[in-house]
Image 1 (cartoon, helix red, strand yellow):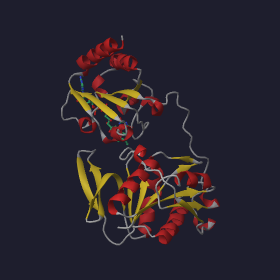
Image 2 (cartoon, rainbow, N blue to C red):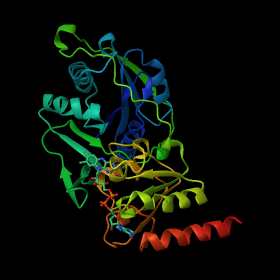
Image 3 (cartoon, protein in one colour):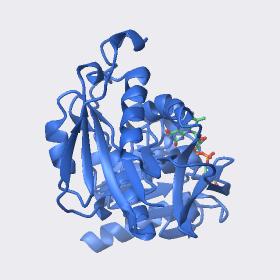
Image 4 (cartoon, rainbow, N blue to C red):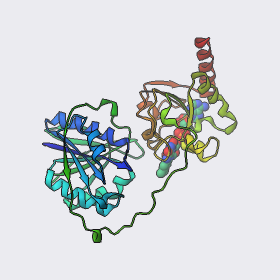
Length: 326
Ligand SMILES: Cc1cc2nc3c(=O)[nH]c(=O)nc-3n(C[C@H](O)[C@H](O)[C@H](O)COP(=O)(O)OP(=O)(O)OC[C@H]3O[C@@H](n4cnc5c(N)ncnc54)[C@H](O)[C@@H]3O)c2cc1C
């Protein structure tokens, strides 16, 4: 294996933060196999973004620039990246597992007679080649996936699987790459991009988060965890069923269809640890789980675990925090 190419994602000049996690995965993989690591940014007028990328430890940065890439289309991105990959000739192409990547990356892989190893949570290197780990049955099983056939191979990396703060800095050369694109081959006509309404709560900026799940049983019990959040100076968050039931507002939901957070401390209270929740919080520096079921999957990602009834544990913790602060 010789070269890893990481395809970064940006929209309107702003990076998708999962790209940096994937870049960290790319650096680590290249280091383990002794190959090169390069990265590509795609769009129109991407010089500044490419310059930012060039400050990372990479062998080369490709600025893939074209007027027809100003807005994302699966046809445009596939054609442009196919041309880049044929020129750069990497052994492995890595993507962040975003909605956009899910849309075009399988099509791109097919152009090379390959498949996309999607949503990988890790890898190890065996005989110089990566073996990717994918989760099955809501994270209950891990499967090893080896790529087969001729390179290039393609894989996407799950949110939170690698840490962006482990990225290595460096100085890379930027190479401009202008693909040859024909407007007639781009079948989709992009409309105004969907904009989410402004969020009143920005969980992504919180240093401590206390998150509550279905273990809380009913809405009237929410103040129990609210007390803990208040005592710790934390933001209150929740798993999806809590927000779906209207017990807390949607903007406090953490997970694949909520916010992705990476606080210093994440306390999961009465949360089982379904994969859709984990992808939103496993980038936290320290995870504390309180659950009465010792086999709950949340304990697999937790740094500290309390097996117990939250209705006893949480008030006791509040007492201790108050004592420690007084
Ligand atoms: C497309 C899709 C997207 C999704 N997106 C999200 C998402 O963004 N975020 C998200 O969170 N989920 C999401 N989900 C739902 C997800 O699959 C789970 O159903 C959900 O995360 C479960 O929430 P929970 O852990 O609160 O509830 P449960 O799985 O019911 O777990 C409750 C936990 O509380 C524990 N418990 C019960 N009583 C007590 C007690 N007294 N003391 C201590 N512990 C107790 C139980 O042991 C259990 O582990 C999504 C699902 C799909 C299909």
